[in-house]
Length: 183
Ligand code: AP5
Image (cartoon, helix red, strand yellow):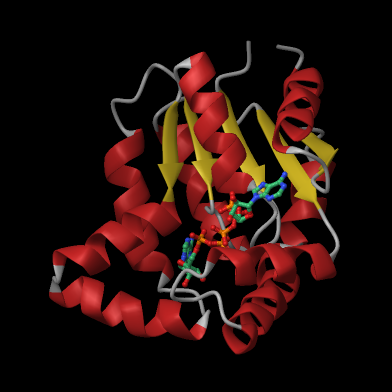
């Protein structure tokens, strides 16, 4: 079974929901940079306060901060891992590649959860996280299109991208992911 995974998709696609279920069932380490950053914000650290300002605008926090968070958790991780929300731009993807080569744990598959904007906006407004209001959601979607979506071609060209339809019940999406990964 593939144990070094990345879930990619726009805000609200269901990456976090599916990653949580998948890691629970298959015993992988769930690395969500959004969750790790929100933990940092809750801790009230200087770093967290700086990150909160950026996150509340729906922009990306610095690559350096995110990398330092991920690096510390991937090293010594041998049971398998699932990245959720990272990498988020070409520079982060490049840094991840270098890191994974260094620890000899290449990425085995990327699941792209696809879904139309209208459904995303409805879902996110329904959730109501601090960065889930119309203005910030529209900025998050813009940044996804500009900075994150180029990763789709990047991983497709490496032959490791699998595309899943995200507009379905949670268990249906989960089954599609399992099928795509051959689990
Ligand atoms: P992050 O936490 O990664 O947010 P995001 O990518 O915007 O993703 P979401 O959590 O909104 O969506 P999701 O796809 O995980 O969907 P979910 O399962 O939650 O990032 C937040 C911020 O942190 C960024 O804006 C940035 O500032 C910063 N950040 C994070 N990583 C970074 C990085 N690498 N570099 C720089 N900055 C970074 O589902 C959403 C809702 O839909 C939930 O209510 C859920 O219950 C519901 N739902 C899920 N699936 C279904 C379904 N099938 N049917 C109906 N409802 C569903």
